[in-house]
Amino acid sequence: MLDIKPVHSMMPKSLEDFEAVLLGGYPRTDFFVKTEMLTDNVYVNFNADVQPTEDYGRWFTFSSSLLPPDVLSDPYWGQLYRSIFYANSVLDNLKKMTVSDDQKPRYEQMQGEAYALRAYCYFYLINFYADVYRPENLGLPGVPMPLTAEDVNTNAANNTRAAIGEVWQQIIIDIEQSSQLLVGKKITDRYRFSYNTLQLFRARVDLMMGNYESAVKHASAVVNEYPLADLSGIEARFQNSEGLKSVLGYQFGFVDTQVNKELMFFTGGKANMNPYYYSTGAMKPVVELLQLSKRYGELSDYRQFIYDPMEENATQQIKIGKTVYKMYAAQDLNWYYVGFKASEAYLIRAEAQARLKKSELAINDINAILKSRMRKDFLVTLKASDFANETLLLNRILEERRLELAFDAGLRFMDLRRFEKPKIDHVYKDAKIFTLEKDDPRYLMQIPPSEFENSPNMPLNPR
Image (tube, rainbow, N blue to C red; front, side, top):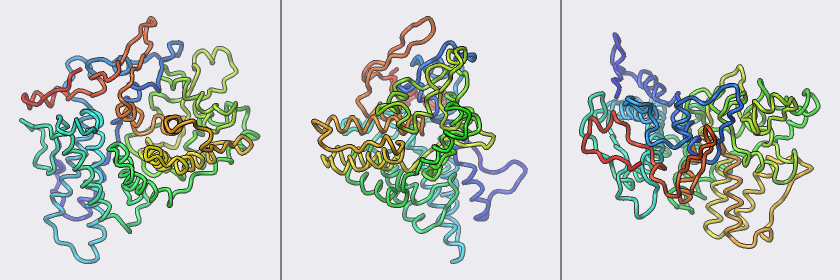
């Protein structure tokens, strides 16, 4: 898709040159944010000052084509394959290099990051453009899977879709290779893959593949390194702010609290002006998310401030709507989207333990989340006796996952796919209802026209 030779410049040769190429391959534009509009996490407030764009409307109404008419290239597909090309280019060229002993740590780090980047991109591609990981689906078409830079260029033709099982297996292989190379390397930059981030990535992959014992193992590695935040510092903002509305606001989002210490990896472009941003835009979190933050009472959970406008002005109440999204607010200091955060490890381990019938261990992890997120005077400690059966416990864990990870990393869309693809209704203009039926083929995004025009024998997804 891209030529890594800079125009009017020399071909990269040194480790420093290829490190620059690698860093250029990390996604810095949106490649998952709009998938939230395909889920049950979003509604449209038509009283807002800014109405949804045609682009957003296509996503929210589950259009058969998510691309505008006559547009051939899918920016999500393109961004991810662009990053894969950069990763493959670095890996291809590093294999040809001989390095000194003092260069070896940097060499291994670059290799490790390149494997991680490739795995990360294939993880999104297979979760967006192919069916879910299940034994009966492993032979179905996945996505094209070039493993060298020569496989991808602007005139690529006759590409094939590797089987779903092959792509997931390659993701595991790449994560393992990356982990071996990055272990012991001190990477503090949260825009680059580190060993700890890879353990969480592996736990995420294992959970979606149903490898629950392995998910527990890798999630535990993260839990042991990342204690959850103490959010009690928000209490001081109750006293120092001008009303509850300003506890989180224009200059201070939830990401600016102590939860920042849990954020492990940023990706996907600047999040300050995301579609669900705290303003009078139309795309908003559903009321169910706000209600989940108030399940134990008003102002019992700090996450209520992410979703509650706390607006007293009647006119503004109508314009803003029932909810807001103040994870990022609109700080002058730019933030990128959260790709991985430590609380996900606790939730992965809780779900995996519950599916392994280890209820007490699962409850311990959910209690850790609640202890971090709830105000001290309202803290609730769950017990096994609170749940009549294992299904109710699992549902409670999944509710906590939905609240904690809403709008993070495209996870809700992936979760709904693995949760048997439930029916979803969206109300749009003129109160018209658009439905994504249970097990709807539109739970798979379509292979873009630019791809199947160059590869006419490539099977498309039914939509």
